[in-house]
Image (cartoon, rainbow, N blue to C red):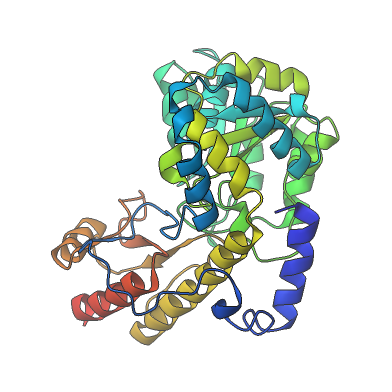
Length: 371
């Protein structure tokens, strides 16, 4: 979905109380299966997946192109690159296709992490794929605790910048806290410090942000800034198992990143991603379904008097008041998977917004466990 179309749609949804404009989910092509019983007895609410994907249109495209499974992806990769470039409003030499956004994170960590003599600055807790990979190759990572609102502490992160800093990692919205940064402070930070280090903006969950005018840092890439943005088809498009993501960066930076890409993606994933970009109904459905699921979980947390962070993602971080490993075990006993530990918040839990039937199971289990 084009950014300008998305912005206008979100403004309209906000003015009409989310669902009224579209007449609820029934107005879309993907009716919400509230009462559907699934054969899988395990509620997988631990990995921030979108269980409604791939969409019907994407499934058909995969099936219709299955014979291309014998072909290498290099020829079809160009067509996806052009589609993504058009969506993001940049030229194709700004785009690097990767095997999920995780490969892009690791490629950037390898390319700009210093390889033994450089330093990376990141929030704590945050998504660790880039950081741990860079550490494997000798980079030093400064993990800066999030503030009292569980947001990136940009001032404290700025205080860690020195002549050895090669990369500043910002996960926005942040995983696992679900928070976003004030857009003006974020823009100012990036414009101030991108001349000292490459700034990496991980926007895996950007599509779940419902503030219509919240900017992607792609806007700064268009200005020629020293910034890399990562996005993925794993979340809003429901293609986590297909492994396709991408980076947007200034062409000279993109060229360096391409040299560090290892696995890349595959032919069927490319065809799936191309169709997913065209399926606006499923995109909107995923956003609205996510809003409804969060509302449902918030209601239960409020009833139980549990603290939580208002989320801009497809998961919620909430305070259980008991050790997370105990909660994980208790939930597994109820056939429900929840997020792993996120130190230092060992009495907090991360719950993904899955199918509504699974959310209802989670709510019941949480009431049972916490009593």
